Amino acid sequence: MTRILGIDPGSRLTGFGLIDARRGRAQYVESGVIRIDPGPLDTRLACIFSGITELLAEFQPTSVAIENVFMHRNAASALKLGQARGAAIVAAAVAGIAVAEYTPAEIKLSVVGNGRAAKAQVQFMVSRLLGLAALPRVDAADALAGALCHAQRLANDLPSTASRRRR
Image 1: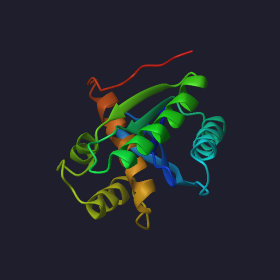
Image 2 (image 1 turned 90 degrees about the horizontal axis):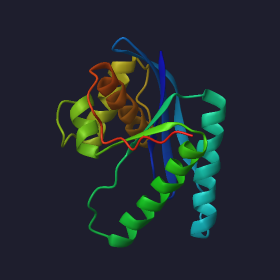
Image 3 (image 1 turned 30 degrees about the vertical axis):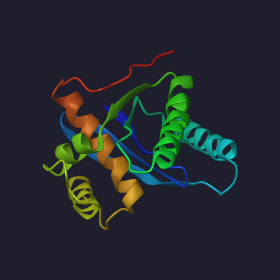
Image 4 (image 1 turned 90 degrees about the vertical axis):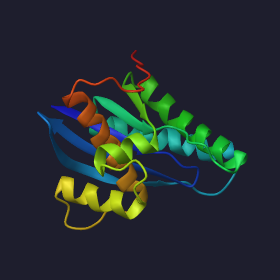
């Protein structure tokens, strides 16, 4: 069994989703968001780092899947997203857990079958694939979708845009 932590990074809300994957089947474990209080950037990044560190310690995932930076109209927003990703990646690296990175289009294609799927479509398919009674909130759904994408890649033994980090 592989336990995967999916992360949807953000400087205000960072979504997370945990699944257990075995032989092409995925089972829901937990999901939610890390709420980041407004304040100086360094404090927000520390909050992401500590939140991810706590999740890693509590749930003991064997791998992490994180959404890669996409082109953004606002350079400042893209930079903040990259910094939020960095805080999450460092938390995994410190814990000695491999990190796989996927573009939003790769994740959507894997889960919905369309790389340009809308957020609502991702929510619906994540809920359907994991047998959830209700739709997860958008940030958690995106994180769960990343975990499902990684599980699919592992099951099919396909390469990812993974940055393999181990202690």
